[in-house]
Image: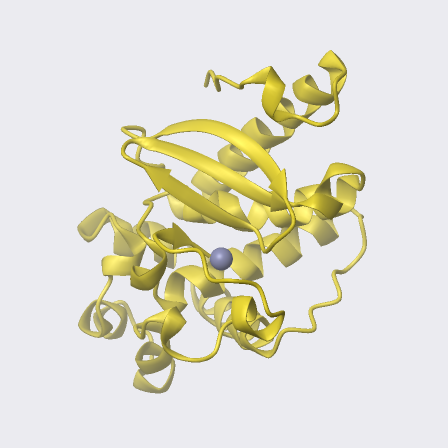
Amino acid sequence: MEIPFNKDLFVGDSPSFETSQKAELKTIVEEVEKIFGERDESYEIAAILFYDGPPHIKIQEKKLIIYLGQTALNNLYTFIFQLSHEAVHLLSPVFDKDVIWLEESIATSFSVKYTDNKQYGRPSDKEYKYIKAKNLGDKILKINPAIIKKLRSRNFVISDIKIEDLISAGIKPYLANPLSEKFKKSPDRDASVGKPKTARNSP
Ligand SMILES: [Zn+2]
């Protein structure tokens, strides 16, 4: 996988910094694809940017820009934690308002697990919605680790997966119900930290 990066986009100016970011992204995307199925390669992963705000994916036509927090610039652990979450949103990108709990749940569950496995410690997740998302994600992946792959073989876009699909894949209604809801319905972390909401972005 070739990921074209614009060198000027990085605050860290050394080639090794850029190279290690590319390498880490490649490793993470491969791991995410192994667990959740292939990503939609009609989208180009165009850049990783750092800014003062919550991590998210921006869709610009067929280009994906990964926005990470400023803190991810100087801390490998934070970088990997944030990137491994956003990597799940790269699989079948949809706009912010369309992301469902299922996608947010597996993204959060994966990032926690991936970071733990890498022995960078466990993230302190203070945000209630993301704790709930992690728990939901853990639950369905424990029931069947290959469930997302199975669901995506019929419905490739994760956030287009419907409650009926979840139930027919063996997920009990008490889990299928919240998982099929839109994530942005209830108060989100953008609001909780007083950041302006960014329209047309994935969380
Ligand atoms: Zn997310």
